[in-house]
Amino acid sequence: ILNVEQSPQSLHVQEGDSTNFTCSFPSSNFYALHWYRWETAKSPEALFVMTLNGDEKKKGRISATLNTKEGYSYLYIKGSQPEDSATYLCARDHNDYKLSFGAGTTVTVRA
Amino acid sequence: DTEVTQTPKHLVMGMTNKKSLKCEQHMGHRAMYWYKQKAKKPPELMFVYSYEKLSINESVPSRFSPECPNSSLLNLHLHALQPEDSALYLCASSPTGSEKLFFGSGTQLSVL
Image (spheres, rainbow over the protein chains, first blue to last red):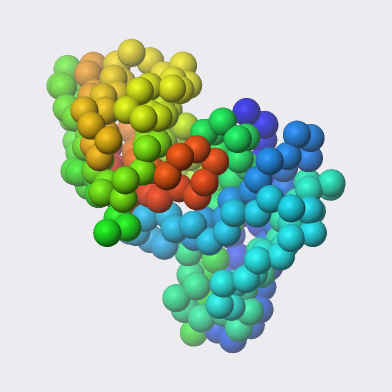
């Protein structure tokens, strides 16, 4: 299993501001990348599964981009709201039931 | 029903106890997973069941014993655990492999 790195580990953002953070992964033999949102005391929830280089996916105010050649993905939150406060996990899919997760970026939105 | 239900939510056990964690889904998913997560660390895969058969064991110590009685249920039997086994245990399912996972909310386990 190869290492997936997420940065920063945590960030604070003012309500209404936009923010973004990074998931880095080894680019060789890429299959797919997953993003999950994990609110406190809840279950991790899938946001996106991305497979194609240059792909961009959007769900409401949250979007993600993927660069498989250089091995990174960005997740963007536009106009952050308190309900966006969560830990965001990315995971590299090895196409064999195995996901390599990063440690997550914890976002706190201040009102 | 798009939920994965895990019980119990919290468990405290001694090193000589035997306990079981339970996981249930009714989405018809054929792959089910156990993950272990320590605070501030990535979730780590422990076991995968595919079509009710154990397909992946990530070199997990034998004091953890998985069981898949049917396509909707997944158990994790615990025996003679160590304090370092204290962690959040997450169950997940997917329609097959390499699709998004549906997670339960986890069992927070403390071994005394």
